[in-house]
Image (cartoon, rainbow, N blue to C red; front, side, top):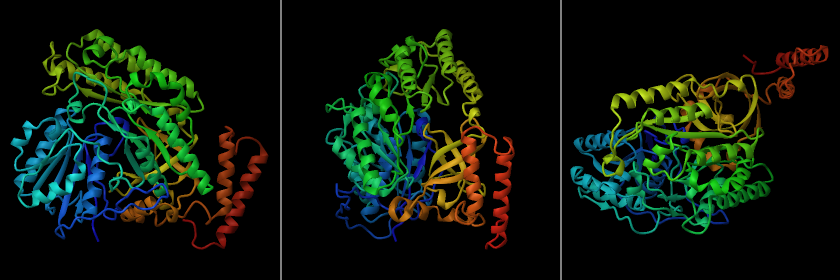
Length: 581
C-alpha cells in the first residue's frame, strides 16, 4: 500500500498557528475533487518505477502548505510513496521553500545541501527558485519547479532520479488547478488558495517577485473545492492567499461575495443532510486597504455560526512614517477603522480575534516611530501578535534604504515588544466558563504521554482537551480549567455534534492517522452512554453554570438534585460493567 506523508516546518504566518513539528501520515488518503454531484474525478496515473520513496519538506505560510499538499497528492497519484519521517531512506527529496526572511532561506539551502551531499535526487520548489533563479546554479544538480508548475512535480522527481536536471520556472501560464489531487497535512483541515500574488508593492517584500501580481481563482473553481471538503467532512476550511481581502479585484468580484456564496454552500449542505454542518470556515490574512469597503458584508459573514470570528490583519508598524517607507498603502487610522469597525459590528455576542504582525527595526525607524508601535500594541492588547526583526532581502528596495537601525537596537526593541505581548492575559476571563468549541485532528505534544487534542472556539481561541477518539472532529461543550497566554485548558462536558466517521471520509482518514495515539484513551470511559445519570447531572450543572448560578450554593433545591443524581449514579455504578475508575 502506498505510504503518503508530508512535513511542515518554519511556518511564517502567525495567523495560521500551525505546530511545525513532524506529524505522521502513514495512512493518508489522496483527496480528489468531486463534481457538483459529488462524484470522484479520476486522473490518469503515470507509470513510474515501483518502490520509489519521496521525502517532502515545507517552509513557509499556509499557501506554501497548500502547494505541498497538492504536490504530495500528485506524487502519490502517480505511484510514488511520500514521507516526512524517513529522509535518509528516501530516493528523492522535494523541498518547498519560503523567501520571506533570511532564516527561512538559510535553512532551506542547508537542507538542499544536506540532500545533495547524501546523494539524494533533489527537487527544489516554491518561492526561492521562482524569485532567485541565479541561486539555481549554486544548487546544481538540483531540479527546480516554480509556483505555477506544481502539476509537474512528478516529472521533476522522475528526471532527478535519472540524474537529470529539470527546471520548470515560467511565470506565465494559468494558475495551478484547484482540482488536482492532494493529501491534507491535517486530514480535517482543508486549505483553499483563493489567489496568488497581490496588488501591493511593499518595499521589503520578496514574495511578490515569486508570486507576482494578483491572480484570483474563478468563483466556480473555489466552490467546487469547497464542496469537496464539505462532503469529505473536514473540521476546518482555511481560505488562504497572500492577501485574501484583495481576492477577485482582478476578475470583477470580491471576498465578501465569495464568502456569501460559500455560506450558501454550508447552509445547503445542512439542509441536504438534515443536520448541522460540522465544518468551520476561517478567513486568512488580509491587508487593511482591501476590506475597508467590505466591512458590513464581512461582519455579517463572520457572524455566521460556521465561520470563525477571526481575522489576520498585519499592521507591520504603528507609525505612518514607517508605513509610508514600507509602501504599505494605508495609515494607522485605516487599520484601526478595520479593527474597531469589525469589532463594533460583531458586538459582544461574537467577540472578534484579531491577529497581527509587527516588523521591528525597519530602516529609518526612530524612537518616536517605535513608541507609536509600542503604544498601538498596548492599546489593542492583541491576543496573537507576531514580532519579526527586519531582514534586508536582496533585490528589494528596502535593502538599499538608509539609515539602517543598529542590530543591537533592533533586538532591544523586539525584546521590549515581546515582553509587552507576553504580559497580556487575554483569556483570564474565560476561567471556569463553559464554551462551545470545535475539535480537529491536531495533537499538542504529539509524542508525549500527556498529548492533548486541539480545539478552537468561534473566536478561534485555542483550547487543549484530553484526547479521546470520539472528540476528534466533534463539536463540544467544555469547561475551562486553566488559562495561559496562548491557549486555555478545558475538560469536556458533553458532545454537541458527534463525529460520524461513516459519513465523513476525512474523519476516517484522521482517525487512521492517529491510530498510534488511541492507547491514550484506552482507560477512559466515554462521557455518554456508560453512566447516563452522571451525564444528565453534568448537563444540569452546565445549564445552571450558563446562567451564572452555583449548583451547590443556591439553596436546598439544587443541593437535593445533586444528592439524588449522585445516588442514582451510585446505584447504576453498582450494577454496571465495566466499573468507572
